[in-house]
Length: 465
Ligand code: AMP
Image (tube, rainbow, N blue to C red; front, side):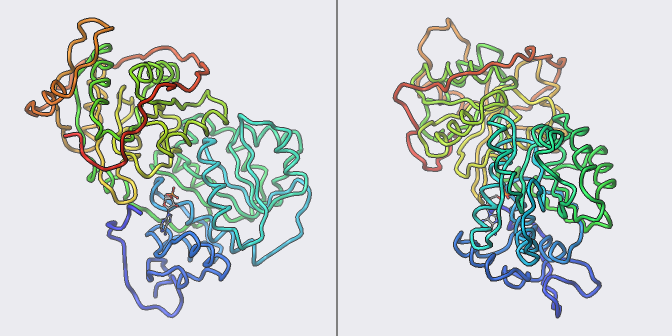
């Protein structure tokens, strides 16, 4: 886990696990059992080889077991999923009930299908000895099967908002008896335009429920939502963002459209780029770029919001298992991607908002490792770069300008030429220019690229420079 350096540990002596002398909750233990977790949950944690609670787990689990509401400011990678899933499993198991058709006893709402699936995996892992029933309701897969799974009722329902609302409106899912609500990645949910759906869904739940809201950031609309749905919440804040950023070697190349492609091809010739996530702004751009990468003999797959669920999982699986060396992704999935061994993140297009940059580069340097983030910046993206540098409170290292593409079919520059970039002197960036409007949105389903040889060369963590 990558949160060990967050300075929130407070080794106080108390006579009640997890509860401070003033009734405040804070970290008092370095073991799961001292947090008050039950034997079946502890056994599952031991099966998963979890030894120590992460800070958010240590702070969130005791108040949640006490039935408190919680506001968690934390992002993926902090162990936040277990922080809400473990107490949920325990509370539901202790108050075991007969399932009622179509009724969910607890609801976990997630913005993306990837995240919903990951949460479901966690529920399965942590709940393996708890004997509870869960299911997932989300877009992109057959609604019929999901409605069928809900016929018997479930203890825990994990859902994305759009599909859940459809099923609620068709009366195939009944939320009127749900006693626990989790909103995960609330800021993402709102960014994606789910606020009305989310409010409608919450309106279905009884007022006398336990609610938890997790968000990586706390913009005003998320704070307002939190105020509306939480009652006297315990607030837990984990500064994972700065921790991750500090461990990442961040560089920028100034390059324009075609220059970016040549540069990427050139960089990928270095085997130190063993497992690379490349971010593009558009879904179409992701498909196109992935095919172009594959055409150079490097195995690459694309993942974005227009892919079917099956295609997304296949792409992610291929990347996780090292069959594909490159995963080309859009922001929509940047927070849902849970892969521990990403050596490099490349921002082929700079994101329009600086916080997305932090989320993107946070895909590397996970699980305590260091990582490298390389950004390509064309003249129209200089404002974005300036925003990023303002957020980070420092300039990114400019490594060099991109090679000039003499013609498109020219073979990519070899290693010798690549070393030219490495050797070039860093100099300060001078951000100017106007915001790019970017290509118009046009969803397109792309086939996973990469039929040629050239998979991930090795998984060793060598740095490109
Ligand atoms: P999350 O922030 O919930 O997405 O978790 C990030 C990763 O950390 C996941 O792969 C979890 O399996 C892992 N994890 C969560 N809690 C612990 C823990 N206490 N010890 C070891 N790994 C953990």
